[in-house]
Image 1 (cartoon, protein in one colour):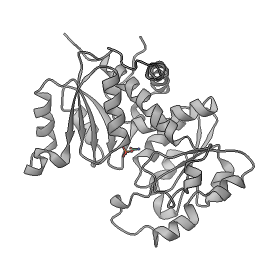
Image 2 (tube, rainbow, N blue to C red):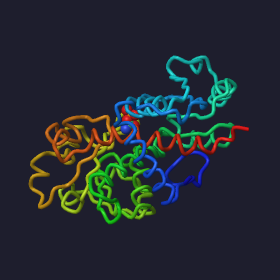
Image 3 (tube, rainbow, N blue to C red):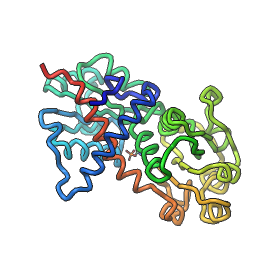
Length: 310
Ligand code: CP
């Protein structure tokens, strides 16, 4: 059986191109499974997984839970808002208490960058990062690249622009690593204030004009403005941001070729993308969500195969 080079999924930065190809090949098999009338397989019958969410989530939390259930794992769910964290318990104490209940794998979303790595170095369980602050969101990048591969046949050689709030986005950073490892060209587009200074070191193109970026790309991945992470004003108003960076139907209709539209969700309709674009034939936003289950089944399965059961 193909095996990953890593013991945990902390970030795409740690993966090789071969790792990503193994994850995609395994996801292909699981995608076939979840489209059968009977969607459940016994692959993880003796594995227990804790889903620890210290930040809000809809897609990622539901998709991990569904992936685990489809493979017959036992699961426990933890939500920070209803936990003893409110009584002052630390992250490591919380996790060690959960692990004392014989947990094999932890899926964690946490607001602090590096939280997943911190945990992977301190606890005896497989760790999957479901988003750590503004750092990485590896399974989102994997499902995004997998969806491009599904729609366009391959990722290699494709031109992908990531639009919007790059500076606060873990999706942007993980996408940049993943797409480049698979041979795509990557551009970021947005106002200068929302593009980090370290972008030069990542080997991506930078464009402030949305029209020019759209004229260049095969795929546009549109990001949400993360007001909850903005402690200062990065642009005068949402209205002004939308006037320059909201993806509209007339913009994509005026292009000489049909581009693929993506969004990781949640969408702020009318802010970064209009409803007619988000719901158009060119948009693969719900395909991304569907593929998220197969990708997460793949990652969990591949890491579970590395658990020592002696
Ligand atoms: N794309 C994404 O991570 O969405 P959620 O925050 O709803 O999980």
